[in-house]
Length: 389
Image 1 (cartoon, helix red, strand yellow):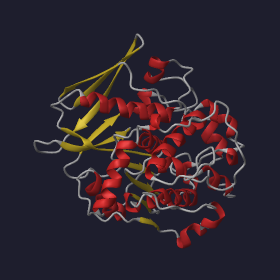
Image 2 (tube, helix red, strand yellow):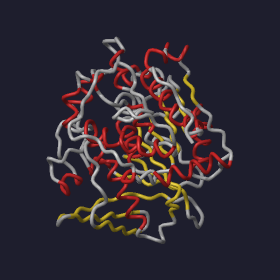
Image 3 (cartoon, helix red, strand yellow):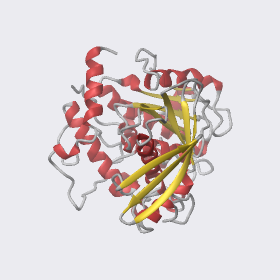
Image 4 (cartoon, helix red, strand yellow):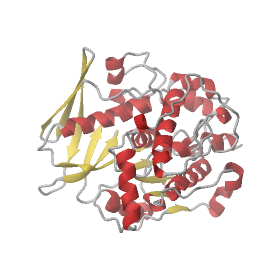
């Protein structure tokens, strides 16, 4: 990576939370239009074209607001009080807000040595091998928001009330942010807070992707086998006609608590969405994103994931940092079983984003599926990719 691109990358990181200076805001009542293709990352809701990295920072925040209003539910700002305490490897996170308080725990596994260490936060535990010299922080995200058909349960909803609009994925992302807040209050933690990753597999992979999209302090996002509702695009998944393969989208949306209840109304109106999950992944840009996927489990809709993430990479291309995002899709193994053939890909991303080796080769977009599942970009993409500076 050249010095110029590094400077762009750093300036984009600094600009991520700065939407207040962007000017225009979304209307209270959104006008949605049918679009059978993947929406253009480089056009604002009002039709204005993205023409600079500053524009992208504003467009990214607009995309975040659209996701929160329609699919994910609102992510609350940092609570009034977040404190952390560390006893051995047990981190206790104490949160207070508006007269209510909760506590939850996370386990920190440190490698040998004095530190400080980069760390990966794992939702529900990790399915990827522990990289040497990297700490792991695991927590029970179901304690924050329960998984299943019953909404409004878990400590997030104890704090904000069961009617809150957030789905479980947003609540889990909130939990990741509170862990970071808590560690910030513990100078002796031996965690390098500038080099944090997040991971999870299956539904927790969906949570990891949402956490990486919404939390700018995450340097590397590693969703694993998240499938439709995660790294897969709704539109491409809905286009697949295999009746015995992918689960019906209605089951993913209406029979789980992952998404906001407001999203239920779109289960048969996916082509009206002003986004798709290529834009959820694009929200991670310019930070590191490594998508680990399975190519032979039909219920994950692997064609949708490959096409969706290949499209998301166009945002990284526009920013001049295409190799900050990678996709590795390998089949013929059990769900959430990390194959050794993906180890070098994972090592490269950890080396670049958590160990600081900017020369690590992360130019990785690959699948072992013949002919890329027959994915035809021209069916889904009718916009051009600019070069932003």
